[in-house]
Every structure is written in C-alpha cells, then in structure tokens.
Length: 402
Image 1 (cartoon, rainbow, N blue to C red):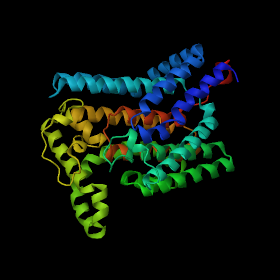
Image 2: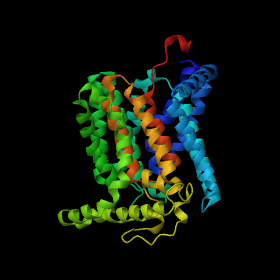
Image 3: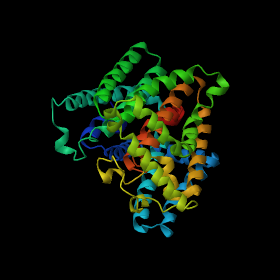
Image 4: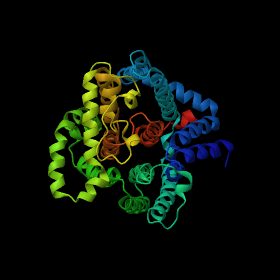
C-alpha cells in the first residue's frame, strides 16, 4: 500500500473508527478526532487536497444562500460580545464555533465519497467495540470508564451512547447504499447490538432515536418522489416549531405523569427540562432581537430548576432553537433557519433513492439538537460534520485524483 493510501486510511480511521470507542472514556474527544483526521487526510496528498478545498470554496460561493447565511451566523456570534452580559465568554465560545465549523467545512471539501465502503468497515469495527464496552460498563462487569471520565454518574454514558448510536445509523445507511446483502446484515446486527446498549443506559434521548430512525426511514421511503425531495427540510420544520411547542408541553407532561411510571419520568428529567426551556424562553423574550450574547446563557439569572439532579448541568438550555433565541435573539434564529433551509435545498439535489436515509439521519440529529446538549459544543459540531459528510459528498472523478 502506497504512503498516500496509508495516510488516507489513517485519516478516515481517525474520523470513523475512533470517535465511538474514544467517546466512552472521553466524550468530548470527537473534535480532536476530526482535527487529526483532517490534517492526516490533507497530508496524504497536499496538491489534491488543495484542489478539492479550492473547488469546495468555489461551490460554496455559487450556493449563495448557504454561504452567506453561514458567514452571517459566524460573524454575528463574535459580534454579540458588544451587547453580551459576558463579553469575554461570548468571544471564547464564538471562536470555538468558528474554528470547529471551518474544520468541518474543510473536512467536507477534502472528502472523497468513493471511500464509503472503507468507512462502513471502520464504523462497524469501532461501533462493535464501543457497543460491547458499553454493555460491559453499563452492566457493571467492568469499571474502566470511571477512571477516565469524571462526568456525573447518571450522565456518564449519555454522550458515548449518542455518538456510538448515530455512528451505527451511518453504517446502516452506507451498507444500504453499497447494495451488498452481507454488509446490510452486518450493519443491522450492529444496530441491534447498539440498541441493547442504549436500552441498558439511562439516555432517554438515544432510546427515542433508536425507535425514530427506522420509523423515519420507512416513512420517508414510501413518499412519492416530489414529496421525498422535501425530507431534507424536516430539520428546519422541527427547529422552527420547537419554541412554539415548548409552552404547551407542560400539560402534556401532566398527562404523561398519569400514564407513565414516575421512575421513568424522573430518569428522563423531562419535567425539569421543560421547565428549563420555558425559563430560558422567558429570558429570550426579555431581549428579543439580539439576545443576551453568544454563550452567555450561564450568566443569565434563572431560578433553580426543581428536579434537576445537578444544577450546573442545567445551566444551558439543552436545545438549539432556544439557545439561539437566548444567545442571538430573533436575528440569529432567522439566520439559522435560513441555514437549515439551504441545507434542505442541498439535500434535495441528492440521488432520489438516498433521500429517505439521509433525511432520517438528519432529522434524528435535529431531534437531538433540540432536546439535548449545548447547541455550540465542539464535540457535537464535529460529530455532525463526520456524520453528514459521507451523505452529502459526491465521488471525485477519477481524472481529478491522478
């Protein structure tokens, strides 16, 4: 194997083999994995990488809505330090977002979709190892994670389960696109193994995704072609509707509390999370146009949320649309909506037979983004770039790779 090919494989391994297993001992390691993967992939063939990156920038300039809305969001984030209640923090968080977004873009520009079969095997190996280790840890057969991961015990496995599960979803999609029955069998076997780990965990979000992914894929698959083109806009619809739905979730919780076991509701912290969303929405409406400043949500004075197991865990909204309103007001909310609209347009240009699977995964990502984790965390931005790049990229013509 030539040196260039070995480096390409190493770069792909950093992005698709390592994140799921490493997340178990270091949940935020995905960002480092993507940076390493990008550097190694560029080093494998500097001239080719330069040509692809320049072509990628030219294509971005042609897709004016996508380019300018992305630039506007990345400029508004640091600019918010002028009116932020925590100016220094706004600049720091904005710098992290801008840098990780640029890394994700360069990864997308440098990527060659012809490696999809290799990526499947990397995902399968990494996902299988992660699933087995999660099962051992969650069933207290081993106790390795606590040596490296100092997160609260109740949330220690949430991010690892999410990263490993979404990686298994990508493996299923790539196996389906390859058209090899053997690969499909292996991929769904990995999905079921990961499902066992997820069901053993305390992550109610990932349990929701475990059911949602196949249902969304099946539902999108039966749509007529003209409606299938719209599946890429499902993330935008969820994002836009979510803040409007939050004030009405309290009565839904009241109904659920009568039907669901109290232990399940406590485990999911759904009631506390809904109250948190409402509190942050109230704060957002106090500064409706430009928000409190990027990353400043931790400095907004809010009453302590009843039912929150650890107060510091609840110091941000755990929701992209609400955090956008809090950080950047309606101006930022509209810009992110336009960015998601541009993503929907790009997704609609895919091969029609791929729309259902990519629509299902991107919708699952947005569901997660709306109900879990900080919206701008580097590890999460990196995972999104890693997952969506193989689905949105097109193979580089052979003439361009010689």
